Amino acid sequence: MAKLLIIDDERAIRSTLREILEYENYDVEDIDNGIDGLEMIKKTNFDLVLCDIKMNKMDGMEVLEQAQLIKPDLPFIMISGHGTVETAIEASKKGAFDFISKPPDLNRLLITVRNGLDRGNLVTETKVLKRKVSKTREILGESESISKIKETIERVAPTEARVLITGANGSGKELVARWLHEKSNRADSPLIEVNCAAIPSELIESELFGHEKGSFTSAVKQRIGKFELANGGTLFLDEIGDMSLSAQAKVLRALQEHKISRVGGEKEIEVNVRVLAATNKDLLKEIEDGNFRMDLYHRLNVINIHVPHLTERTDDIPVIAQNFLERICDDYGMPVKRINEGGMAALQALPWTGNVRELHNMIERLIILSDKVITENDVRAFANPGGGTNIGAATSAQIASASSALSSSFDSFNNFQDYKDHAEKEFIKFKLEKNNWNVSKTADEIDIQRSHLYSKIEKFGLKRDAV
Image 1 (cartoon, one colour):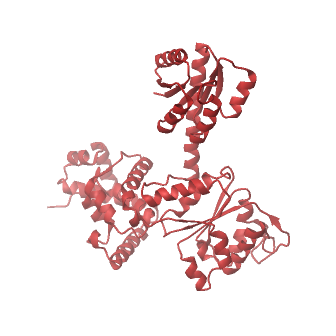
Image 2: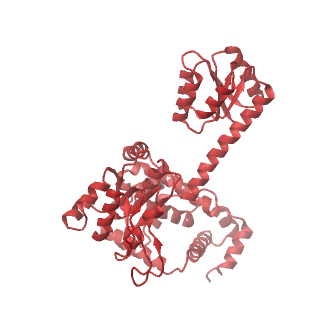
Image 3: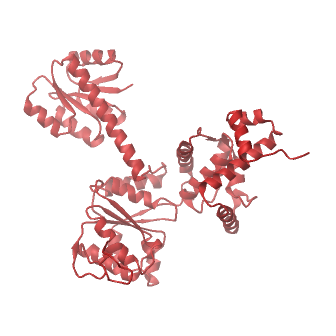
């Protein structure tokens, strides 16, 4: 049911509008002034607002302007007994969805409200779809460190300031960069990402600045570099600490002069790019060791955002784990599983050497291999496929051993489908043996149709061991 707010200082108008809209099954609240109306908008998720223009305390146009700052996608329908074309145009320019005159025509009112709600739904759906396409996920967590990161993003994103994002592998540096771009004035322009650690040092300059045909042996045609591709948008240099010194010098020049030259070219090309950088290294130590330029460090480090290790914010693990559960189960087309209190406590006790990325992999493994409810025993069993580690006292050697065993196990599969089939086969075999090969009981326990379980038994060639 859509939730509407009426802001009007005339009791008769509020009562009439409320009666009409409630008859159409809308959930309606009303208030007699704009100041209190704005407070209600801050605290409540309304789907649409009907607001009078001429009011005491605060003019309706001012209410509209301030509401746009609080919730820019909230549809506003302005109403007035002194409506003119000029007033309607002004309201539209300030962000109003539509304008109707008093006394409102019943049919026009209902059609306008319906269209305003449809528009609001379309805006929301478009943002969700855009986020799915861009792979921009929410920054999950309410810990002090994460709240500070979110606040910093809100402050810094609309500016042109360069940002250096630091933190361990898998902690979420790329996600921070995506949100800085998403909330910036460049959001409609491209975000170009470059993983400096993944590109050989001899090719990094060509990758960043492009090259002219014939500039080196394999340069068979002209290539546009990442700086040019990001023109007007954002360039994200991930693992900047692994960039060669010669490439660093060129990046420094591009930041200073907003110009680049392709490898083998003489022409200077102007670029309008906001640069974000990330690293898991201590750049000050890299500067001491002669591996990173101090002048480039100061150019990049206008704003520093440090993403903490997952073990420094274990209170965020439940909300992150729940989000992963829902997303992964949705991707697999299966009912959402649940982690009980013991299982969640066990997850919070793990060392998380791979941070949020490792937690995602862990949740996926638990979904595949566990029952409908994930327990502490499941976490203990599948956190360390090497077996037997006390998760409360895991040593570095044990963690490394477990990681090595897991990697070795994964290497035996050619693709993801092979791994899924293997995991499914072992899971079903375990459950059948646990239930003494009672197919009906096993099907009920793992929540699938008995006929489906028979098909799986046949598919994987599972047979009861001879007694």
